[in-house]
Length: 517
Image 1 (cartoon, rainbow, N blue to C red):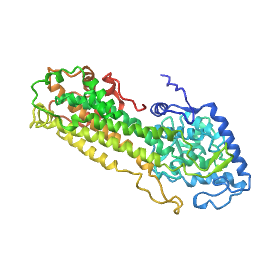
Image 2 (image 1 turned 30 degrees about the horizontal axis):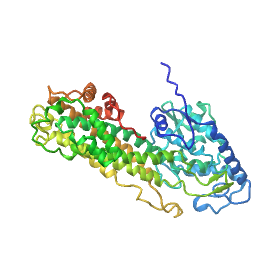
Image 3 (image 1 turned 120 degrees about the horizontal axis):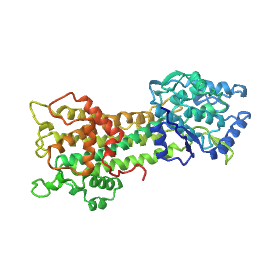
Image 4 (image 1 turned 60 degrees about the horizontal axis):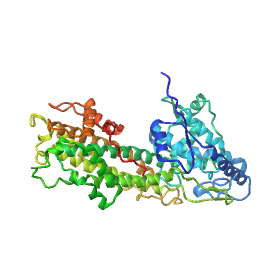
């Protein structure tokens, strides 16, 4: 079979949208800058070349770095200065970045350089584009950044591969970066003035991880709307709290969107119609009644974080910046990832809360006191069988783990670099944890889907709505109904994958709230 040839995404620096970045990340698409970016890149590079040959000290061009900025560097040592900068900063440790996220980081670096304020030559841009196009991905250790003065260590590992140092992945094989470049028909680059600094200053590592967490987190939020609708029918909950006027009176957009989607998912449920009359319950527990208020609020928070991250993805974040219109090269602090740190913390709290209320719905369904006549732990033979007893315990464990990880990281500054960099964002920590949190959340929602489908099937011959029937049918393709007890770990994994892939949502054929509004 001929491998699919992916058409490169054309990036307009300053105008690239989240949807385009998500396609690049999910499909590992190549990318290149729009031709209109070339002029700005060239003009900034010319200013840096002039400064490198001048007598005035310009930070990072003809001086040392950080606490060593007062040391002047001779013109003939420019190449050595930049090379030493990269190699000395390759101090990352830990597991490597996922390949798709590493590629997204390279794309974000392209966008930053494309703003025409970094002073790199076009050859630097062309090499990144070539590596993306030919599948040469630097192996980048994920630990070592504090999210200020740029994501220095991880970006240094990316840049080292461009110099032919370190390792790169190509065709699923990890090999010396120099070999990977050669096999791809690419040549290592020799860095000119400021180019090493431009490549390692910046927030692209933190932003790439935050975007990955955002994209998968939003998919989980959509999945939570489906699983919560299933749970509502499983326990014969009321749809009265979804009345549109209630949510319009509050006016919160995410809440309105969540209620609208839940109404659509539950519309036509025979189970719902069966207990409109004669049901002695007056109100459902909050985990059922307040679903739009909680999940909707989390969606609003994620959308706010998304706006921040979209801006950051298009930002020039290295230092110093070349202000061509003003004829100036100016040191600033755009490399400080505080906006990304706040955004990551917001996403983490949203993920934690979506999981917290979902876990309470699982607990509700397995409890015969609260589940409105469902058998204990959703097993046909309680006592002889334990049913979903320990699956619920697992959701409690993962909910608690996510609560711990949701603690803000941006407040945990620590001084570095001989107190020159005395306040840092810890955005890298905040962004990296999101992948683990989403994985935990997907399991919680997967267990909820399993419990809710089991509960709905106990309501037979009454049927749920057509959209939710579609979700149950899709779930049953991978996980059969639970009769007698069986080995359940594989069931939980399969259900979590249906959430993570979006397949459960797709099976409902119901429009979902979108991240960009």
